[in-house]
Amino acid sequence: MNGRIGWTDLFWSASGRLARTPFLIACAMLIAVAALYEAWVGATLHWLTGWLAYPALLYCGACVLSKRLHDRGRSGWWAALVLFALVAVWPTPHGFGAFVFTLILGWAAIELGVMQGEDGANRFGPSPLALAV
Image (cartoon, rainbow, N blue to C red; front, top):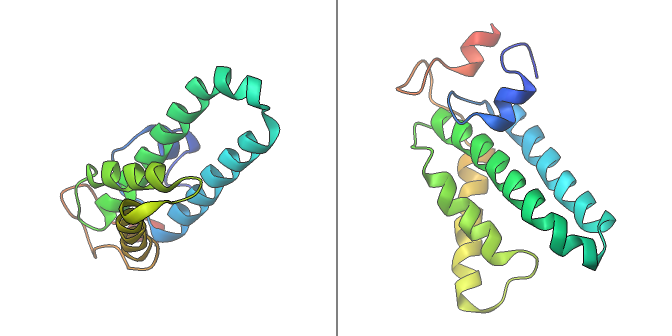
């Protein structure tokens, strides 16, 4: 995106770190692809192609989330909780469980979209902001 990480590595590799701005752009792109897929595919095609489209979107989302979690100093396995919560409330949340999952998504939005990554290198690699300088 900015010379440090390629599109393939951004969406198909879970290693490394990712700064806030590329993370938010990648999330917006994944949400846009999911929305376009939902709008374009009819009900009949949805059952046939959804078995390929949704796992690919979830995998790409897991990779992007893992990189951002790494930048915050957390294990990438937390991405599983975030994606599980997203799937549980998509497209419309119902019941108390959905309330809990919505709280998890709120935590993820603040933790990953608002808070700054760790300064300097951590166990997941060098700071993506240090590479830009």
